[in-house]
Image (cartoon, rainbow, N blue to C red; front, side, top):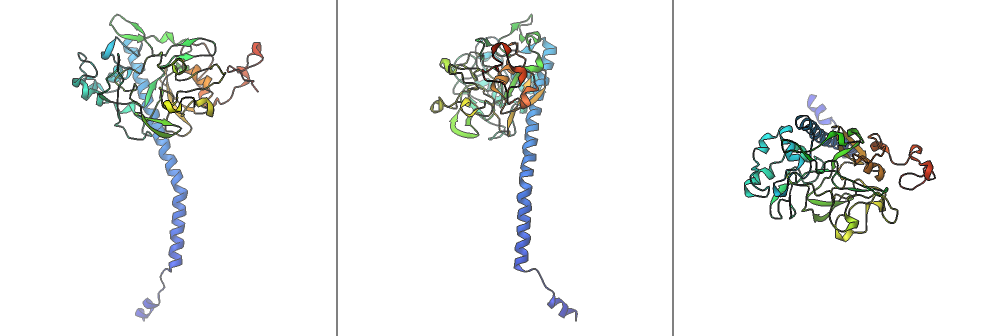
Amino acid sequence: MSKLNTLNRKGFTLVELLVVVLIIGILIALLMPAVNAARASARRAQCSNNLKQIGLAQLNFEQAMGGFPANHTNTGNRDKAPFVQLLPYLDAANILALYDSSKDISAAENQRFRLSAPPCITCPSTPGGKIRTAYGSTGPGSIGTTTAAQVTDYALIHKRIDSCDGKSYGTPLGVGSINSTGANLIAVDSFTDGTSNTILYHEHAGLPNNYWLGKNTGTTENTAYLWVGWNSAPAGHGASKFTYWCFFENSGNEFGWSMTTNASNYGKRAGAIGRLLNVTNTTSAPYSFHPAGCNAQFADGSVHFINENILPTIYQYLSAKDDGEAAITENCVNMVKWTTDWADPANGNMAPDGTTVN
């Protein structure tokens, strides 16, 4: 009898199996976006933590030395970039021990040093992983076109700003003052806009490859942004129209321009698509692989995630330490249009970019 029951017992039909497989597929399809979003959020948090480590190191450096580490110290190929000066405060004295200060950075004796970068200088969202190398440009402070070094995904606010009031403001960590110990330092009291309202570093991810609106252009960046060398001169490079990584205003009263990815794209700038962030990673422009914005580290050590649709003028106000403009860190989160408190009654209630404030 028991054998007969076993023979009459029904199993799953093919249709039932297909229905089960379909339901599992639907559940996976619903779950994957949430999993990917969680992963992206975790990577963004890790990137923010990297910048917080850098900010804390800078504050500890300032306490010990009496000022922030200046970009472009001393002269020639033995200059130390700010990241290098921060190594003892990034728990990376072992890497600094590899540096032979009696030799140029490009010397063979410093190869291990150039390729032994601290982990906090790369963003986990960037394609290519942590180990990415590039070659420096020629000239003072470079590592040479035939010598590889690790790149970084974080760049100094290093280009001077061509502002609509006709003034140019220097990089927050430009050439400083030499103290009694020979250190080249930036005094905290030079941040007249406030350390909490001045960006020092922002994401400049993806190097050595060039990206334009999230797509690899197929070209590579072989100059600057190597963690051991200069972060480029404040005056920029190239023709006068391409001197700065961003503009307040050009002769056509357009705002939010950014350097293009390569020569074939000259004339196609960020202003044409209405934003400054995450357009191109050329010439230290703010760029990340996080959705909707990028992280920036302020002089007070704080890190903020900046909306990619921020008004370019506001971002540039936050990029200068002494321009006297009333941009505050809260503006970087959702300042996507001018508010009435920015209107200038003496100029027809116009916004700083000349548009009407509604």
